[in-house]
View 1 (spheres, rainbow, N blue to C red):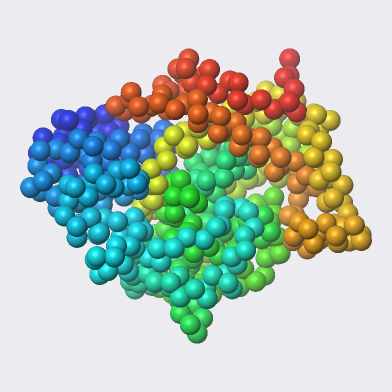
View 2 (tube, rainbow, N blue to C red; view 1 turned 180 degrees about the horizontal axis):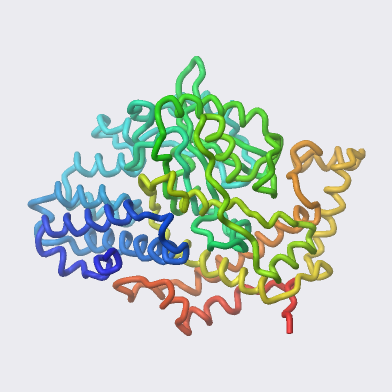
Length: 479
């Protein structure tokens, strides 16, 4: 039913304002209400791309070729944009401002996290309206202790035990399944089954001190667990696409305990953990943070459904010393029937998402059909491996490296040194492949009225587009 609705044309639906609104509402409601635990993971990825493409295409069509009724029923147009909940990029804002009145425009911008000087009454819905240079999974100069001193980071519309922001009422404990804007980040989730829906998971909490309350996203990064301001994490620079999942049984009793547990976890965790099933509270993976948070709040933890089972993938990982094949992946939150989807933040970056998906699939295919040869790793791998050994042993040279790199024998990730030495290099290689692929894909999707990922993947143009950019010399073809 949902696929059939997505295939209906804008021109057909836009003849009447009520008809158009009903069409949009039905698609958004149906997507939100999917029983994801009962749907094949590959089908969910298909739907994800079909719906993101539909939102982006419809948004562009409504603004660039507005329906005849747009000028006389702008409130319905604004309601459609609200339900789509898709980021309106700068080139589309100017023509939009000519279609709706200034107050409607300011209201729509507030839902995008943007303030308006001439209608400040909408500012609480817009949130802080300021960004920080924080990148997913990388260290920054903005720890929680520093950014919370900026009073604006408490400037949200609080509602009960949560906050209204980007079209969603966020409540503590919410799971954010994110496709972050760090090309190559999919390397962490590309090798497990079922297929990954997102490359990263993070968790909403409201942190509090004597000065105020600060809505934040609790996530792992290369040196442990941190809090990122909610608006920064959801901004188009940090994330391309985020879906939000919530425990069906979540109560205010749970949310209070989650907020307290979030502060404790940030203080307790020393570093990142490559083993997502490890019960060690001093080292955590992105998914295990949620497991500990929810457990501390008295919620039943999400069970692991994902596993690394392909024989060649297993063999290759064993060559790196990695043997954690029960793999608690972000998709496990989505597939657990204890949780439900409560919304999305779509930053209108379809082409970037598609390029990452294509390269991640190609990487998995290569990894499952090739033999990993560490002798062919980039030369930097041997330097990294030597430096990690120096840091772990606490030598004088190791302490000097720690001063330069910020890693010491406490916050170094927990896992095989061989994997640690190469993973960021492989991530960078995939990142370059993604950027090349995105360039090659430029314009390829504009001719589609409806997007089907399987059909697109089977096209000869796509095969050509991803064949050359994804080359990893350290994977040797198995005959």
